[in-house]
Image (cartoon, rainbow, N blue to C red; front, side):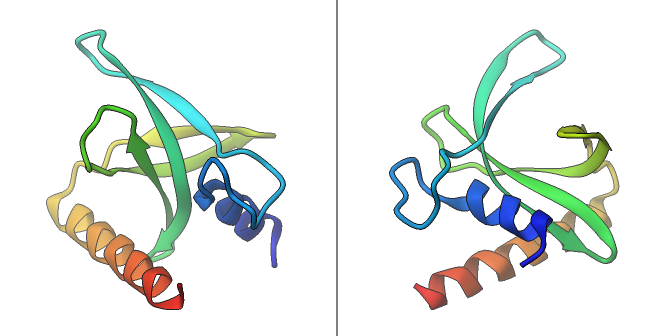
Length: 106
């Protein structure tokens, strides 16, 4: 398992997870209107050669936020808005396929 796969697996674990030794990673998103929301990092995945990140907001909804993911240094990254509708559709399909596959494994 590569280091990136290990990080993604650790990020997928629930808060009381028995499968890994680390707690889940969280980040705070700040929107243009100044609103903020705490999000759990579900994982980082690839789609057509690019990396994306899935975030679960702690706002009482069942939404998942998908962004482009770009590493900019050691343990630093930036989120990139997906502005192209076709790209967003492809990323959604890939995320749904990954989550369906994980559900089947459980």
